[in-house]
Amino acid sequence: MANSRVLVTGGAGFIGRRVVRALLAEGHEVTVADLRAFPDTAVRSVVGDLCEPDGPGRAVRPGTDVIIHLAAITSVLASVQDPVSTHRLNVDATARLLELARENEVGTFLLASTNAVVGAGSAPGEVITERTVLRPLTPYGATKAAAEMLLGSYANCYGITGAALRFSNVYGPGMGEKDSFIPRLMRAARDGEGVQVRGDGSMLRDVVHVDDIVQGILTAWRGRHNGPLILGSGTSVTVNEMVTTARKVTGAPIPAENVPVGSGEMPAVVLDIAAATALGYRPVYDLEAGMATVWPDFDPKEARA
Image (cartoon, rainbow, N blue to C red; front, side, top):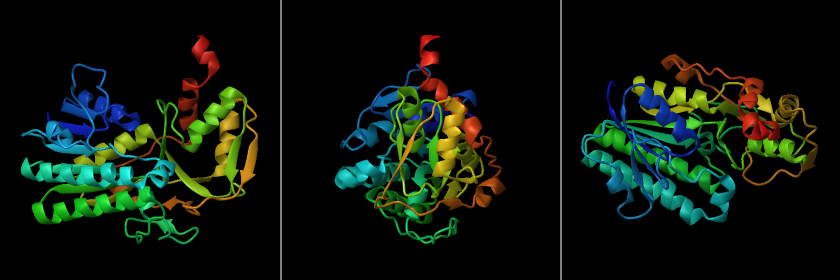
């Protein structure tokens, strides 16, 4: 692993920036492929759209040892609104990158996937493992399941070490205006507004801090993991608990309005992270400590300081 050449797609994004920093700290040579340049001259930036014909080809060069493929449409809502564009990036661009990995003899391919590939494959309260049947409920989950299958076929046919890393709901500093629930809570606290909670708020979710995800990605690489691997906190919390914790961290009342459950909602997310912990993965952040790292990005007092 020492002094490896690593391509990180989506490396200028929320998770990617922290992955790249960790790789640089370990002495690796990093290339970032993203829609914008990485803000560090130590990194080779390839700016462009991976969906364009020459996008992946400019990013993957001979001598690349590892591809960490984070670039994707990750919004469930966006995937429902535009499933064709979601397929182009999440499946077609992934297929092109895999073919370039084969042609350039890249040894390892780490795919950012999601537990949304399971969807309706788990019964309410059932613990989700790497062996749970895949029955995605949304175009986002379906395209990630397709990408996983492509990766598995390349690992089987061409000897690439391929890990499909199934992230739970990732949060942390630098989320900006993302539409997931924790930044919505932070914006509501900042703006003196409330949030909508689907159902009665008892749905279970596994939320994991971005720094724990970075640790998980590097652990999977070091362990030469092949196949799917669940990366989460390993502790499920209810939506109501997230609201209560956000109130405690921010000091804001954050009123909650209960609304009907929408389509594509998994009834519960309870994850078994035993396979990852067997490799050495150890998530550090509990919900309160993790939220406390997010709030300064939104806190008006921090902006005035």
